[in-house]
Image (cartoon, rainbow, N blue to C red; front, side, top):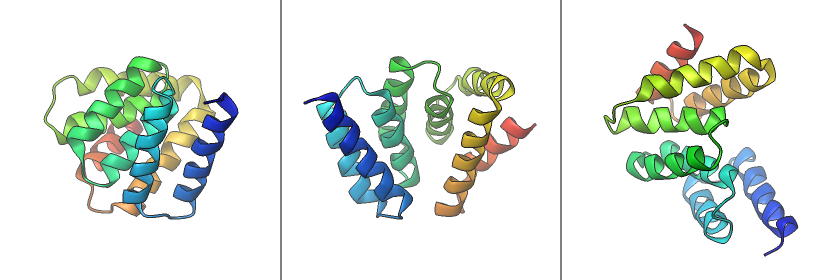
Length: 140
């Protein structure tokens, strides 16, 4: 598949997310994207986020680990991994939170995107305890 087609499928799925499409449908879309483009870290990052929103922490842990392995500098992937680790009682969350904090301090535009993501997560899943902890750590 060409890179343009991969990007197009990814962009379409992302746009559907922003328009409020059901998370279950979007998970299927991003699973297809990650099957077709297994080295596309953004696909894994989005899949992990959707799995977290859909209360699938073990699946999200696997997806987030893949995203971080593919792109260790991506703060959203690290945040997703931290959330999945919290929800599955996996050790090592602090290391990822510290990396995200450093990125947020050095790159205000990325900090704004992460804060928007946190707000979006709380809006879509208001009872989400793990995201409240991560938000407090990142703000603290």
